[in-house]
Image (tube, rainbow, N blue to C red; front, side):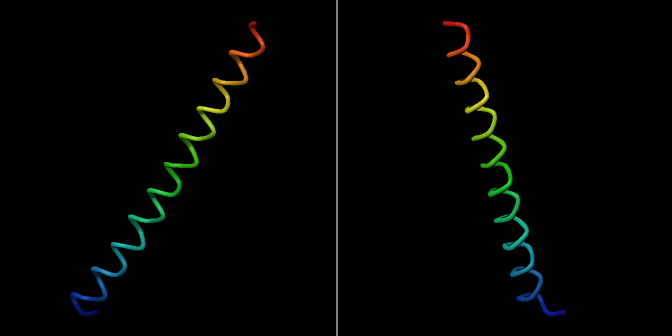
Length: 40
């Protein structure tokens, strides 16, 4: 495995991680929004 291959793997892993974190943040935000509307 060359250095370039490792960099490519790392970039793919980081992108997947960011996408996952983005979904978690979005889900959390939506849940808070829904909870706020229920209180009103």
